[in-house]
Length: 443
Image 1 (cartoon, rainbow, N blue to C red):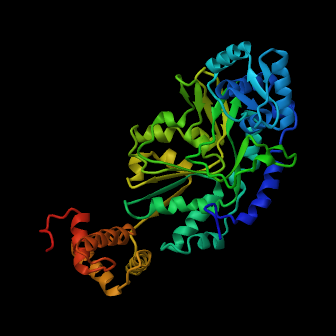
Image 2: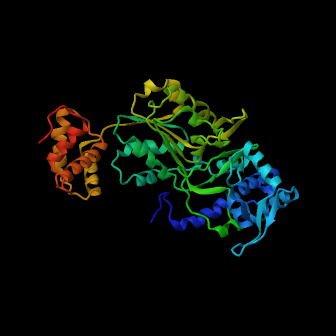
Image 3: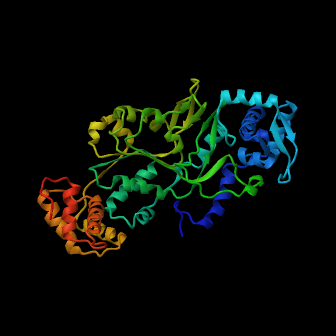
């Protein structure tokens, strides 16, 4: 049985050692790439938030091995910022808390940065991990492409254009009328990126910490058992082993969502969308319907597409660069020539148009939707919809129509007490409501 990532559970055993080679677990403070003062401030903030913590709890919170946490605690104790508290009957190990000096120091640290979480990964380390697990080294073969879409009614010639586009590493521009299946097909392309990627909880740029892991976008492949946090042969626990990310945005996209975001109230940085999509896929759907002009959105990608590097800026004004390693997909139902000039379209490389389906393809989609709803597929009923509804109105056969019309017809049938029955009369009613026709309602 396959998971959502396309990986079987027994394949995780292979992925974890591989992740350990890409990002081995640090055994000392020096190997984290972070200074003991930086880590001390972070641990202070955890203690300020929690009150009292054991070493085991600190290991889980920081994502650092026990010996590293011990070194940080020794540093803080020498500074007079932490103290040992008496054990209780339920405690396993020593309990630590902040002293008055430590609480004051923690408040100063929180004023500099509100981040409280696992220790971040230095930008240089993150860059090397991104480079090692690059999405551009993957090669999609024709057989694999067709296998991934075997259950989808789609012209195979379209697949033979999408496959080379994925292999190229270039941006992909998908266009066509609404309802032609662009969004559905582009979302399924992530199936072809069916291995894992390490995603850091956060990245350190100097003393600034940018939160990157997003539980709403990143899907962990497995949850590490608490005991594994101390294993020497595991991967760096500051990363999360995830399926390659799929980030999708549409009309809600604003220009600031593509830049590092800073919340002055919490003093926290949040990574932009394209950074969260690194080593995966970023789909910009409904291009041209954003709150900002299309040229503003498109121009944002010119330098990253050409250089393979994205240039970002912190709230402090500090600039830094990250690898632009992702499959970038633009999708629109507007005329591409009205959205972008020839120079920009030339940079994209691959443009794939989606159109209406044939009579036979419409029937096949209709049959699939019927099976999904557990209702009988009657080819005569489907042909009636094509001949008597699509034909006279000149409405093209779109892949979305069978699903939408059948859904509405079944809703109407249930209202009339005719559950699980697909009738021509109900489909006419669905048509009239779906397309907002001016005809008199069917009785």
